[in-house]
Length: 278
Image 1 (cartoon, rainbow, N blue to C red):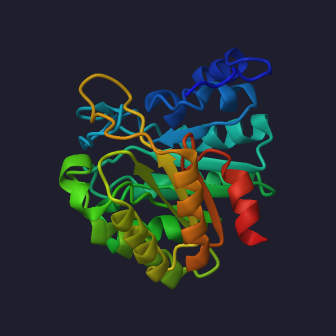
Image 2: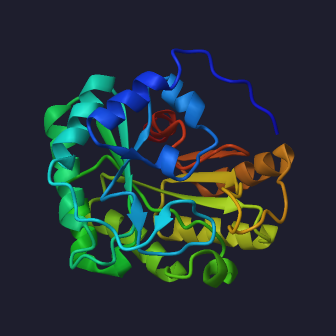
Image 3: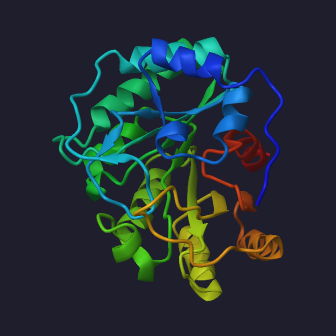
């Protein structure tokens, strides 16, 4: 698994702007393998609500502790960053904020509305936590009307206790379906990591479940352990296996599917969105 470094202006301009606006990216915090490529091309996934998560997922490199208070300037700062970068498609995610009464949902809605108001030509994709399945919190983000609502299923149900101990498989499926029920025009999206010990049939069943809950866009990538103390990689998936899974997903009716070693839910998100809307 080797990749050539991208040709471009490098990471420094992007990093400088993010520090200037006091913004965090999941690219940095989660140690994404695509960081160099995306930063060199002037794209990133903004991570709001701080850089510290209240959950302890076994696959994630983001800090786990008691988070700081929300930054009230963050909505305007994210909107400014999207404007400076001239993004056609802005992707926003966040840590889990189970410590907050509203799970951070009000802040989420403020960020989405600020980005849309400042950048009316930009499409907005959100990648949210599950908000513990609380309808009012989920609805707050839906009602801000992002163009894509992403919530990752991450793994197969049999691995949830080990991989996502604070989450519930059915709760995540219900969140995705609620988006479609409340706002049918919003594209829904979800992703799964492979290489944690799942079987092919388990993966295909996840695909079926996502389609049964009206998910439009699917991403399938290789799990890469972000460091010591995180879940180990149990298997590397061969390219032909990703191609086979993509074919099976196409037969199920997803509008767009990205599958491959370095695929992540936010990687090439604009291209995936364009493919989905036709």
